[in-house]
Length: 411
Image: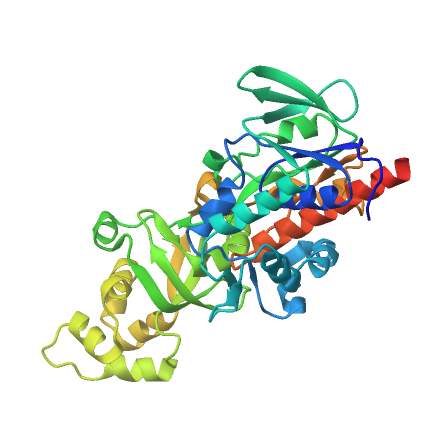
């Protein structure tokens, strides 16, 4: 879709992946595009993600991929199908960035860096006429339709656009610009906003000082976690000063958070030896240990030491530790009471934001004709593993095409 009236102006607010993708679609459609962002440079959160290798997307089958979006999968399905893992790979290659699939199925740039990809993307956008305006914080709407007010180092300024794409981010990582402060401006205009919640986050447990001082920072590898009503998941996580965090915890963060919000502290079960059967563990624990200490016995017979052994002593009463059968059962299903999610400012991502019910099928706000929304400011969540970035870019693309179509109808 390419428009002929380049005098029509589109404003994108937010220079993260969703906003830049919307800008790319609009520029390709012949629009004059201006991108505004509150931060000094583009893609701050994108670059931070690159420090871990920049997980672009995931190579699993598309049907399974879409299931990762939980109760928002039906709304996101068409967008992710149109711009999913395969298309993201082709897009990166078009920028001169080779990719590879890791052993876990995750897709990364060949050099595992975000900066070269972002530089190439911004270079292409500028070549297509996209103008970027930094240190411009959107604070609300002016009196006229699609007139935007920005706070700048030089003072307040107003900008009028023929169409607007808002890609303002969620509420996690406020120091990188995603602070969720924009919700008040949209709520004032009648936009339905879901409350912010942490997603892909750590949780507080409430360790004793003895355990915390010895094991905070220790990884727990090759374990499994089970939340009531959920299948067991294997992986690894880290003991923190206040509780637990890491990839295995993030995978359960949404249902665990919701359970805590509904019922208070929630008990999960930790399998310290998921590769071993309960019968094997019982036999090894019951094996005569002679004069050896229990700690030495657990290490030599079962390979349990360090933080794993510390957890047993932290969470089990003495009588259970002294009973081989009960101890074996606990090794396979150690009860761990989780008290609360960590603050949203520490979370990798957030749930909440603009409800999809506030949008039409083209991603336009029903309450504000000509204003479209994309990215993590929408009320969806997903686990880590490339799903967050994929949906951010897919919704940005969809909002860009929605804005173009709306303008075409109005010409």
